[in-house]
Image (tube, rainbow over all chains, first blue to last red; front, side, top):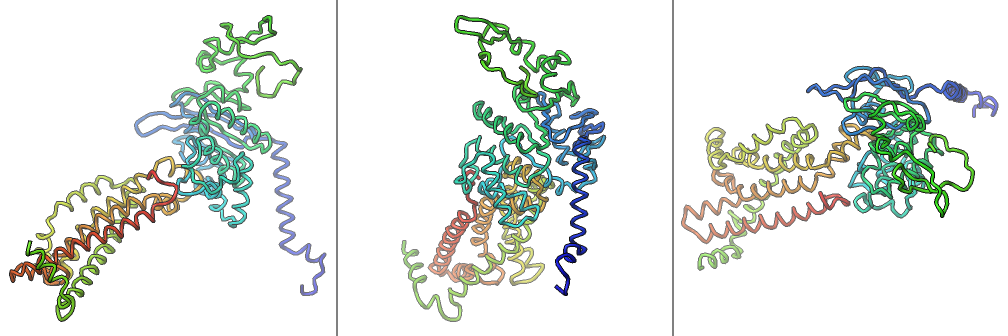
Length: 319
Length: 221
C-alpha cells in the first residue's frame, strides 16, 4: 500500500488511464450512434478473375450499423464474393472496403476474421470437435481464458435454442437445422459487431428454414448486430432484411431499397421477376367469401386471412 | 512338406536363438532397421505431403515422383549404392527410404486433400492462421489416411529389409542368404516365415494405432 489511501489509489496512473479510455469509448459510442455512419463501406469495388470473369463490378454500397442488409440475386451475381470481401476471404481487384472507417486491406486478415462473425451454408463445423468445442473456437483464438470461452459457448447454445445436452455431441450426430444453430452460436460466441451470413439456411428443409429465420429475427431484435446476409431466396430476403440489395450476374447492383420500397416499386423487370411479381404471386387481393374475408393471389388461390385485430404495421414488412 | 517341418524345427531350436549368430539379434536388427527407415522417410515425406496438401502446390510433381520412385528396382539400387558407398548400412537404408517415401507421401498428401474444402474454408473464416488450420484441422482429420500410408510403407520396408544382408548389414536377410548359399533350406525358409510373421504382427499393431488416431466424430473420413 505504501501509505497510499483509497482516494490516492483511485487516481493512480492506471486507473486514470482506464477512466480516460472509458470516456473516449463512451464518446466514440455516443457520436457513432448519433452520426449513425456506415459501418461497412464498399467504395467502387470490383473483382475480376485472371480469366476475365467479373464477379463484382464497381459496387458502391454503404451498410448501416445495427441493420440487417440482405444481398440477394441468382447464383453468379457476386453476392458471396461481396460478403467475403468484408473479412478478407476475398480481396477486391479494384476499390476499397472499409469497416468502421478502416480499409480492410490494411488489416491483418486473421485478426479481422476473429472480429467478424461468419456463418456459412452447410455449417462448416469442425467434424472432429464437439458442439461446445466448435462454439468456443473464436473466443479461444482470441486468447480468452478457457472458462470464459466455455461460459460464452454455453450462453450462446441457450441463445440459439440448443439444449445443453447437445454440447458434447459431434456435428455428424446433429440434424441439419441443429448444425446451422451451432454455426450461428459459433459466429456469435466472441460477441462480434458484424455478422456475415452466407446462405446460412440454404441447405435445410423449408419448415426448419422458417423456424431458423424466425429465431434469427428474434436474436437480431435483441442483439442489434450489423448483419450482412446473402441469399437467393426473395422470401427470405423480405423476411429478414431491413434493407435489400438486389444484384444481377456480373456483380452489379440493380436495386437497393427497403423491403416495402422494393415490393411497391421494383426498379425494373429483373427485380419484378425476381420478386415473383411477374407471375402475379405477390399481387394479392382480398375476397369476400361466405366463410369470411380471404386473401388470394391474382389467380384466386387463397393465401391467408385478413387479421381480425388492428395491428401496427411491422417496420420492414410490407402489408 | 518336410522343408516346412525342418524350418519349424530350426525355428524352435533354442540354439537358433542364442549363440554367436543368434536369430534374436537378427530379429532385433531387422526391427530396428525398419523403424529407422520409417522414421527417416516420415521426416522427409510427411512434412512435404502436408505442405503439398495444404497449399495444393506441387501436386503433379508429387504424383510423378512417387510413381517414378515406385518403379525403381530395390535390388538394383542397393547394389549400385553399395558399389558407390561400400558395404554396410547406408546403402540399404537409403534404398529403403526411397521405397518408403511414396506411400508415406501419398498418405500425408491424400489425408489433407480429403478434408472437405468447406471445413478448411470455415476454419479460415473463423480466424485461424494457416498454421492453425493445418495443425488443428487438417492434420487431425487426416491421421487415418496418414496411418494407412505408414502401414503400407512399413509392410514394404519390413519385407525388403532382407536386402540389408545382401550387402552385409545383417537383419533377417542374413539367415536367408546364408541358407541359400549353404543349401540349408530349413534356415532359409525359417527366416522367411519369421519375416512374414513379423510383417503380419506389425500390420495388426499399426491398424490398431490407425483406429486410435482417427478422431471421434469422423466415421466418414
